[in-house]
Amino acid sequence: MQSPDPLGGTRPTSRDVARTAGVSQATVSLVLGDKWRGRVSERTAEAVRLAARELGYRPNLAARNLRLGRTRTALLVVPALTNEFFAHVYTGAAAVAARHGFGVVLYPSPDGTGPARDPFASAQASLDGVIASSMATDALTAFRGTDLPLVMLDSDPADPGAAAHVNLDVADGMRRVTRHLLDLGHRRFLHLASAVPSWTFDVRAAALADALRGTELRTARAPLNVADAREAAHLALAAPGPRPTAVICDDDILAAGVSKAAHRLGLRVPEDLSVTGFDDMALATAVEPELTTVRLPAEEFGRRGMEALLAVLAGEPAPPVTLPVALVPRGSTGPAPAP
Image (cartoon, rainbow, N blue to C red):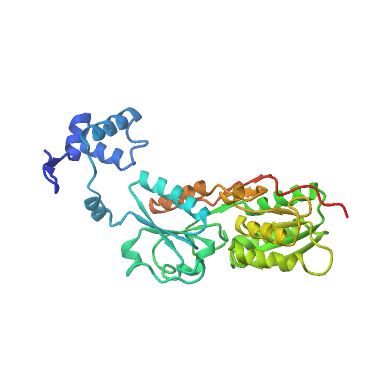
């Protein structure tokens, strides 16, 4: 029997789907709730899905949520919407969420980093869980100490406050960059580091210092924007003493600022100065020469974060995950200039 549709007419019920597929309502519930594996056959599951599509059946999520005591909503906390990397993280998380009947609310820290107000009057009543970047950990004050499961992205795996961790192998990324530059003959380096206090940037700095032990390494810091990066790089490159022949940046945005500073100083990239970034977003191929950088799998990062949260909500194990990264050599790096 079909139930009334608030827009007029009637809408199919799970009983209609069961009758069409020749199965029980319990089987329909298992299949459409994505809990059928190991309980019904793939053939039966496909028959239920086909019947649901033919009938135009849509589960009553409001009623289901009341039974489950869940809102089927996750919060993704990121430092800023202006960073393309986090847009890709959201895309990956939202794709997994949609397949499981979840929605993802994207919440940026208002100033890019630092404390943020609780975006909900009652976090526990409005959410099932939180996925957060380590760059926005100060925005999580409202959720610490609650019953909401927290999945941390690119953060200290020793953090006891998180139910699961998904990381990128950023240390290996820095090692790949340094091997590339050392093989090109570079021995004087500048690290243009992010001024954002974050575990992920601390790991990059430590890996860089370890890989470049025995060479000349200076460090300058800048906020994650091109203008400030340009000024910081200009000061560092114009400082007295032998100039670095390579600049290693924590982010592609910082690397774009270095390229602009080099141009202002009359330095050619890469003939006089090699420059590397980190992320491999669209900016890396928008600058000239194109940027040698470390590619981070941003969408996969978001997907794995959402999968970890769903596992926690289902009471299943969510072991730590570390995703591999890759060096992408382009035109911004070349042999070290002759003395």
